[in-house]
Amino acid sequence: MSRCVLFLLVAVLLPLTEGWWFIRTNSRQKAEGDIKRDCIAKAKKGTCDFFVCFDQRHPCEHSNYALSFGWKFCTAFDQHYARFDAEAKNWINGTRKCVMEAMLEFYNEEHVNCQDVSEEMKDAHGRCGAENGICSLPLLHNNKHVLTDIYGVNEKTLHRMALFFKHCGKNTFYAIGDWFTDTFKGIWPKVDNFFSGFGDKLKEGFEATKDTLKEWGNTLKDVFT
Ligand SMILES: *[C@@H]1O[C@H](CO)[C@@H](O)[C@H](O)[C@H]1NC(C)=O
Image (cartoon, rainbow, N blue to C red):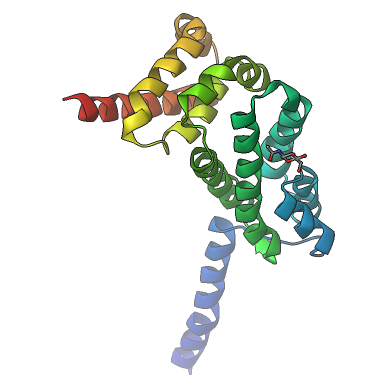
């Protein structure tokens, strides 16, 4: 009899505890809004409002890629659109459609994990930007001022730019590295001092940037030795 109870307990509790474990490590949230046809149309056209649509369906408390990255920069590029040359305008339009196409997959899901969305979308953004022309040196040089006006010359931007450039391939790497250091040279001496005064979280962010740069350095070595 007691054996039977024990068996029952194990049979009932084991899946339960596994269930708890599952919820804690893969916290996925249920969609709050319906899928809307005009939202899908906005994504297909590459309209910034799609990011607002996304947030209405999957409002992410933390790691909110849709608003704090997607919408924020999409609208900033809209505001400065006239300042870009023709090549960059094509890059912007192509990148948007590509990013939103990737994001539509999450939009259509009934449950999402906000952290996964954020990580995968940042990667998709880098890939889309590279596929649509950010690796072009003329584009980078001719639009440098407007790009740095939008992103700012700071360590966050270093990291954001690195997301693009790691998809550019070895051949364009060296030249882009030059553009990169030229654009950001103003912040190099300040960066270390700046971060030593802050908490661990910021330091971690900077370490990640340094790691990315180290990776670049290694790739550069591969190319030229
Ligand atoms: C980019 O998209 C906007 C809005 O859809 C459009 O007005 C513009 O003509 C497009 N530009 C290019 C270069 O395709």
